[in-house]
Length: 257
Length: 270
Ligand SMILES: Nc1ncnc2c1ncn2[C@@H]1O[C@H](COP(=O)(O)OP(=O)(O)OP(=O)(O)O)[C@@H](O)[C@H]1O
Ligand SMILES: [Mg+2]
Image (cartoon, rainbow over all chains, first blue to last red; front, side, top):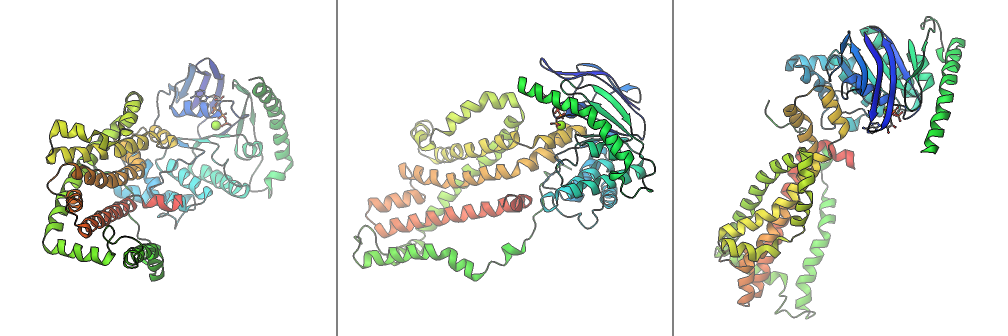
């Protein structure tokens, strides 16, 4: 469904991404991991159509992506909530862009706030919500206008461990329920293994896909503590090995600069 | 949907139930000042010819009110202040939004605006008198001029400092420019614009009073100046007190207005 073909992005004479190849199937949950500054956010901006690649192609249903569109929903790391609107108003904001009639907007917004577990918080402003709740609002907003693809840029990075884990479970639940295609960016190995069906590991500057790893943790419902299972440890180690060299290389580059 | 969207005001319990104690506490310093003003001349600490006791000033104030002078002059001043201030708001806000939005324009005009802002309006008073005479036009013009800068500069910076992630969000939703302006830029900029408007409110009275002292046949600045000239010292102080009270009331009104429109921001900052 999504295809990246030798995608390269330069900023002036600085190359952020150098030939990224990646395929994402419809309904797939793909996680992209990479060291800091390897171009993960740049890649997401390209997928969102906010910037254009220097060379290479990004395809959605076989057609080149040439601008932003409501077929893709973005969840930003910094939540990007409108502080003057309530939780409900923020979710409605996405719906206004799609031209859903006013009455239906409120109804839909309530429904999606309910989906992310925020019933009863509709009238709160962002500053009256915790970090986890804010990110839930942002997720509800991007789900509400029903995009095919959800693009998420380190959405849980700023949250504490417990909140993060519960939001991860919630995201998986939502994904199973809605069947969305999800491209999820993180620098956390555990998060990548826990969430992804497929994990693409990026190299440090300039970014390209070093390896993609298929993750199969078996039936989630059967395992009590998935994170301490043997399979989890195996994948965790595999990705750690892949990333380790890259992080070391990134640090050397940092010093050399 | 052509309305500018701004957060709805929230009624907050804390502001409604101001306790009596708080009122007493907060007016203590002013009461103290008035007490000193009353007692110092009476006890001979200062020459009562130059600083008459506050009660004498109040008597003079009452006389001015009774013979209609106070009202006439106050209305003359308020008319000029509000006209200049109002004109400044309706011109500088849209202009600031435009300049702030077009980055090259902002960068081109930035240094020029700095120069104008830092040129005290009163320094230009002779120029205004030279070009426009000493009538109403020149008085309103100088108030307008002085009020434009705080509003313009605040509005420009308000637009330019809108959270970039919000702009990114709007872009990802493919929002057309008009909607972007209406739904993101304007509400995000509103608090900073209001700060500029409030500053301009204070400026409008300061500058006008000074202008009225130079050449005018009516107005509070004229009243104070004429009283001093005629050695009617209590009347002079009565005029000064009136100007202070008007300044405080005007500012409080603008603060209240600002709060109404930016309630979402209050708790966030505190
Ligand atoms: N607009 C830009 N102009 C110039 N350089 C940029 C721009 N955007 C990103 N870069 C550079 O491209 C590189 C990749 O940036 P990017 O934000 O994509 O990294 P990242 O992998 O998301 O990092 P992090 O994990 O810290 O979020 C960085 O070195 C950054 O300095
Ligand atoms: Mg990033």
